Amino acid sequence: MNILVRHPVVAGALAFVASASILVLANDVWLMRLTELLIWILFAASLNFLISFSGMVSFGHAAYFGLGCYGFALSAKAGVPIIVAVMIGPLVATFAAAIYGALCVRLNKIYFAMLTLACAEITYSVIHQWYDLTGGDTGLTQFAPPSLDLGARGFALLVLACCAGGLLVIRLVLNAPLGLVIRSVGENPGRAAALGFSQRQVQWVAFVIAGSLAGVAGTLYSAFQGNAFPDYAGMRFSLAPLVMVILGGLGSFFGPVIGAIVEKGLTGVLSHYVVFWELIMGVVVITVTVYSPHGFWGLIKRVINKGAPRG
Amino acid sequence: MLIMKDVWASYGHIEALHGINLEVHAGEVVCLIGRNGAGKTSTVRAIVQDEIRVMKGTVEFFGKSLVNLPRREVIRSGIGYVPEDRRVFASLTVAENLSVPRSYGTSRLFDLNEVYELFPKLKELRARVAGVLSGGEQQMLSIARSLLTNPQLLVLDEPHEGLAPVITQQVIAAVNRLKSKGVSMLISEQHVRLIRECADRVYVIDRGHTVFTGTVEELDANTEIARKYLMVTRDSITSERM
Image (cartoon, rainbow over all chains, first blue to last red; front, side):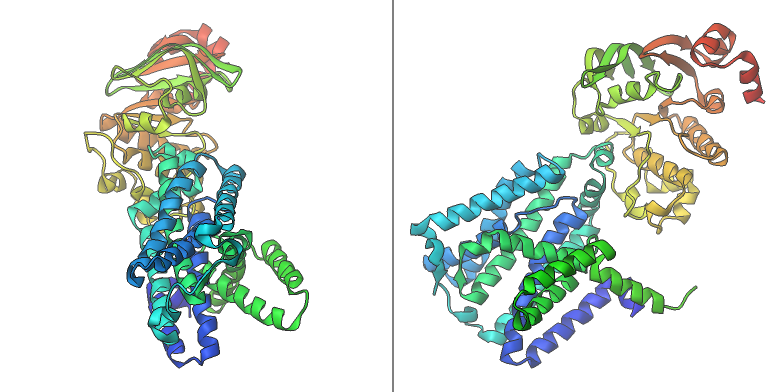
């Protein structure tokens, strides 16, 4: 087990093969659940890239998720071929991240977080109120064939490929010279400036990367659900990946994967049996934050390291 | 290469420098000395435009004004800066820390191999996370990282601050190695031994202005300056020398 922690590429490849096998074997109900989970993993991983490695806590990451949804939905509704529409979603999100990012990275810490929230609220309001274009509250439906005509299993495998691809992109960026600079700025902007780097430029690049990956997740979510609603750019969709990142463990690459599994698993089970399930979720988040700041991934690593032979 | 003329600078409304004059020539090692709070760090910060604002006077590097330039532009113009707190990127390994800098200089004097040759300890520790290194090792890493920008002038702010005496020796050795390679340095320092072993010239700073300029020997000869501004006597200088 310890070897998997030490060699994340091997762990990732094994996880990919195992996930694909599960998707091939899963029944329809589980197929739907797992497809949604994979989309959330990608969304949470994009936010984790921003928070854990770039030093930017965003309260409005749903803006790019929502714009990914609407970019895809509106272009598909306009008659653009599906294959092109699928690419337009992330492009819209990337474009918005470039604009919002240029504004947000001018500030730091809580001011940055509040600005991201403001940008997301603007996006939500525009989507919500531009009835003629977005359908307002009623949202958009029937703009693309179910599961993009790939069948539920084919679509699930596409989502798995996108999720794995997204994680791979994050991993490659983090280990590339660009990623080292992003991590340096995220850890200590002043010291990075003492090496001649512009904090704003570096953070803007990281912001755009995170926004575009959220856009990919949003596009897949819209295709999966077969609809697009303003809520997808709203506060609830900004908080959910934040909770996943915290539950999984800040500062770790695999944290959001574990966080998304825990969050979706707990939500699924609790909401089935408990009326006030959100109350219990809140207690879980508080407990993890206080007693295990490195989240469930931190716990898993601790257990693995304990079991590993010493020396 | 670096000329500061009558520099007045402040942190917000609080004035810290009241007329600093300083010059560093190519290949020279210049030390700034003075008591705590005299303005050594503020002088260094006024050069690299770090948190302090120059209100009056000129700071020129090869004839180019540095006043009000963004810090990154100062660094890119060829000044390597190792700040007082020498903070490394704690979550990155030593090798990753050394992969972060870009070379801005034209000399290309330092690459990774050269730096490992200068600081062999860093090569041994290259796979280790920088956050767990000792203070001295972090200082080495911090200096090495700045060298990889291939600066024409290396500015070190109190490189011995908070280090054990045995580590201090390593830092002195490192500075001497750099000096032998012809690296120009400006060092804000209180450690008399480093000043004696490395400095070509010394500036004594007090209450934000320059009160003495000269060689170490000239400083030795001027007991009035040593007593008044450094709170050291000839006896203490001599004992430090021994």
